[in-house]
Image 1 (cartoon, rainbow, N blue to C red):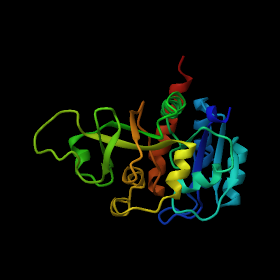
Image 2 (tube, rainbow, N blue to C red):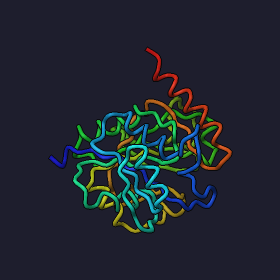
Image 3 (cartoon, rainbow, N blue to C red):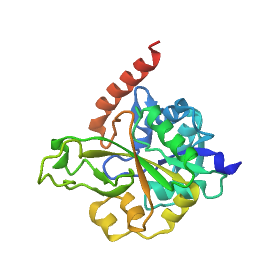
Image 4 (cartoon, helix red, strand yellow):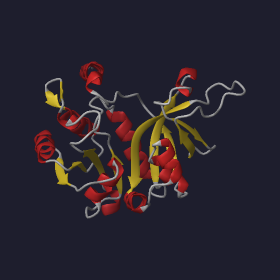
Length: 249
């Protein structure tokens, strides 16, 4: 049935202020988007892997890597692009897979896919890892605090929780991988940008502002994102380590 189908959708636009053409940037001899497709296929938990893009060159690279390319128009965000791509497709749940993480651990994908399949009442889920005291003051690292059931209370670039009193283990670093039930994804994409979302530059705050429950799971491993060309060597090293680990008996 459609509600049991889980799709991986990789939003991949050509234009980028800091790194134009990023999905096609060569990483260890392949376009970056091809590596992300391979990680989604490796996870073995999706009924289909899709690349949502506005560029024919990216679509061609996606198809060569084994994904189904879906052309989209101009979108406000990657999540809105994912929603446009799946609107007419049969699916119960959809993972928004970041297109700039060529060494994305497949187990992180399996965690989210399994959770959404087993918990159809949960509209949205994401991942986090333990953070450090140094992470608190770094605005490039997004922190999350949760309630006692594991649902997000707030995400911020600011120090949360504020360390007025030392309590070990409270700092959690958000991992930007999202899963939605399809109906929740379409609702999310229909909402206007909110004030807190605009202020923090974090689209997940749109869900919290509208009262959507956002479950935060413990990630299996960290990943390396490519934001600028200078990040490529670090991503290639992470990819080599991941592929070496897979070859071990």
